[in-house]
Amino acid sequence: MPHALLIKFPGTNCDVETSRALEAAGFTAEVLPVSELAPEVLGKAQLVVFSGGFSYGDYVMSGRISQLITKHKLGDRLKQFVADGGYVLGICNGFQILTQLDLLPRGSLIHNTTGRFICRWVPLKKNSSTSPYLKLLPDNFELPVAHAEGRFVGETGDADKYVKDGHGALLYGKNVNGSSAQIAGLQDDTGRVFGLMPHPERFIGKDTHYDPDWNGAERGWGYYLFKGVAEALAA
Ligand SMILES: NC(=O)CC[C@H](N)C(=O)O
Image (tube, rainbow, N blue to C red; front, side, top):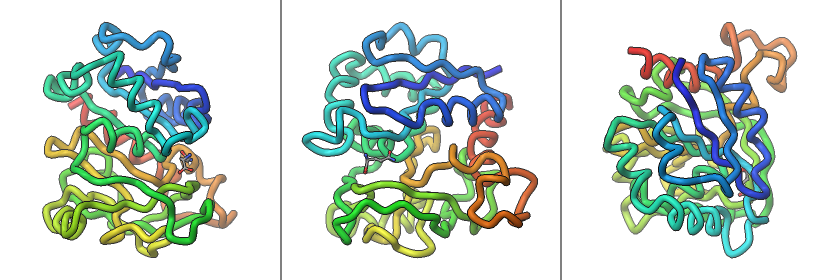
């Protein structure tokens, strides 16, 4: 079984659901408090996960303090982990951390254009035929979002470029937060690093869909995201 290591910061609050999702998809999952984070712990993991939440209370900006502490503790070892074939997933607050850790194409996640926290389901569009995280998902599906700082901005023109070249692997079908080029998720060149604002771990079983009669697939769409990585690791 592939092993997933989920790094928990003070204020991370999606670690339990995310661990359950990982286990449902065939991982062994370990939640590691950031106080125990050290380069050696990466050795036993195939997937490192940064889950959602309000790490360090979103002070300074979402993910900023977590990024600084991770960088302080790991230096470039996470980059090395990816270069050696490792996978890294960032969900919501985790995506905010990953963009600042320089593991994804350049850009920032800033306050939604509405200035409000958005908690709702959104339609999504797949924009990558190669992403292991998305390979089991259909072209159009939906997941919940819950964030205040989810608006992706790149440098001028970057976001459009990311959509064309496939780095912008996941797009909003309805642009709820004002993201440039409707970007909801980004991948790196290898496809092994993926960050997204929506919450796949909140839609693992059919029963958590907003429509009690939903019957779009055998399981919730989020399940297939985790399963895709598990399959890629088993191949
Ligand atoms: N659900 C989350 O991970 C939220 C991320 C961050 N705290 C925000 O509000 O933007």
